[in-house]
Amino acid sequence: MPSPLPTDFETVSRLTASTESRLQAISFFTVVLLFAALFVKLLWNGVQNDFPQLPRMRFLTALKAVVLWGLACVVVLTMIAGARELMTPGAWVKKGATYKLSADERSGEKPSAIDRRLSRLGEIRSRLMNYHWDHDYKFPDSLDAIFADERDIEVPGYPGLRYVYVAGSNESGIVVYEPEVDPEHRFALTEAGNILNMTTEELEAALASKKGGS
Image (cartoon, rainbow, N blue to C red):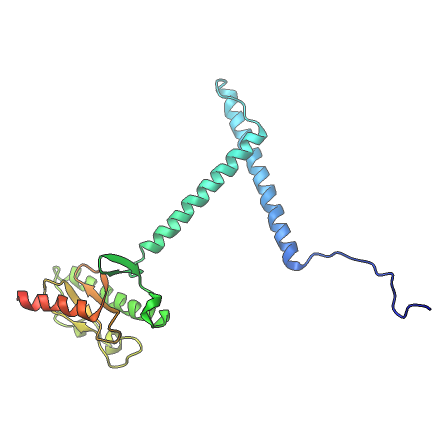
């Protein structure tokens, strides 16, 4: 009895678009690597012609040198990128005796909300520091003196709730701090331009020490 379906299927292997693009990238990288090794070999041997005491370089040796220097460059660039993240103003905040990332997942608040609060405090810091440097290292009497729009000194997400400004030098060194929107994470700005992450108890203790010393 003849089969109702054809049985002489031909299997055709085809590369997907993503696989083909990966192979092209690998091929391009391989060709560039080989040409770089050839260039290093020719350059070294060209110098060796003028300095016979230097050894001749083989292609395999040049290839190893290119790969080794490439890996070293990757490590250095990775360290530079990591250092930039660590040194970004406001990226790390002080918590007790240590520093932690500002977007703390334990805060119970969305990271985007914390980012907005830190960004706003960073803007206030920039204005205050510029005023501080331009006026013989003195701070203004109030934030209204440097902000024309009141919304610029309001806590993001809390319309009408302004940052608290502490005029004059004090022992705590705090010049601006958040009202109690999050008792466990209240950001405060110091005279030195540092942003601290404090609990309500820590903040009140710091402000109380200022009052006690005055």
